[in-house]
Length: 283
Image (cartoon, rainbow, N blue to C red; front, side, top):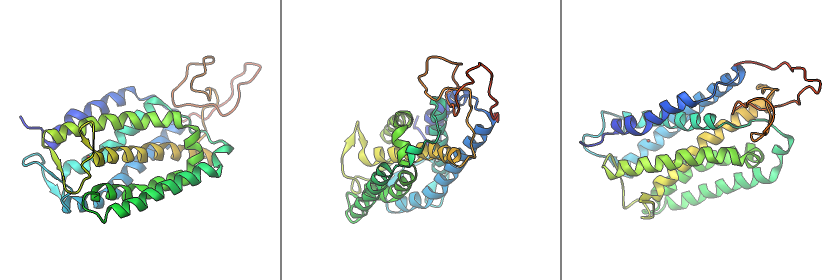
């Protein structure tokens, strides 16, 4: 029995989504509202920003779908493709929140060197992508870098100091979904759900997966995870997010109350042992 694109979602996307929904922590009301706003915004942006790019590359013959593997097309892309634009950010976002992270702003997060280095570095990758677009074999990779590079540069220009300081939290949240989607994509290509052009790719493979596909899933997960942590970080910096004052800031703290993996401390405990009031919000 041949795997269809819808079957791909049922086999590879929905099961981990359901597991993550069950495993996701219960956030305080205020932070839950901010988190849902961020995830909704990132998902909407992914759909709007990716749709024209995806349709254009399909028209250019960068990839195509196996006969009988899709339900219907809207424009040049199948319905299942648009569904993936929604499901991937939710998958990566839920994994991030299941792991937990601290969005607490610190003054050192505003330091210029990491913001400048990250912003300029990703803009340089965008320029390199523009050069690759002028070649045949580099076309797909160039399209990815030109499409994702400016947004990644903006993220680092805004919060590069925070991203460097909290790198041990968000990098794992990027790596695990990326590796999983590499595996799922490799299976789908092998079963003919979609086919990547051999003439518009460099012919470099990572564990059997075209370099371009590996790059696509890496940069999309970077955009999702960095976007979510930076959104909460900005909300905390602007005073729109009040973090739980009764939880330790250090995620590895051994003492104190049982830790909610996504809560942080913004003020020290009362030395007299009295409780502080905290905002409860509860492809």
